[in-house]
Length: 238
Image (cartoon, rainbow, N blue to C red; front, side):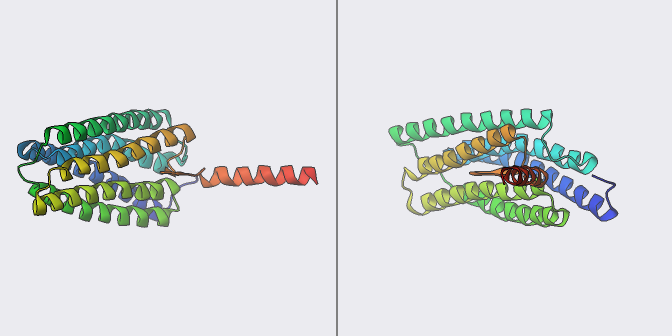
């Protein structure tokens, strides 16, 4: 990468600050969710809070990625980012197991939360915040034509869906007080937690941030190189 223009420097600084905002919000969300979830015995809210702290680990890797690309230009993961992804992926898998186990125990013991009011409030705030972050990251990523930043924005959709799960389970429980709605929320969180774990290990193996869910791309430069190789091979065969 050549010398960055003033506009590009400004956009990378914005992307870096967005990653820091994401980290800070997840810390606050995690603290409040675990505290209020424990106080009200809302298992889905507590699980959501633990997920928020794992997202902090992921956010640290992303902040490092934005800083590195803005400074050195290479989009391929470095060792720090690969390690961060493996640690984060392992944490998501452990969380998945814990959520499923908690759901089973909750159903077996007919556990019921005192209230899920704070689950509604926190999930609603999360939907607004994550929606804004997705929009802001996509905007910056498209202006920079940076696939890793765009991929990060798209993967933030998973956090949005987890907020939807919390909002739905909390809202329905507050309305109908059906005991299995809270563990059902845990199962929903477990599904997305498992997918996030998969994504982390996919990215670490591919050494690129442009993996999200079942979609794992090579960076543009690598795709171009692959196409060049395929074209050369075809020409040689002819």
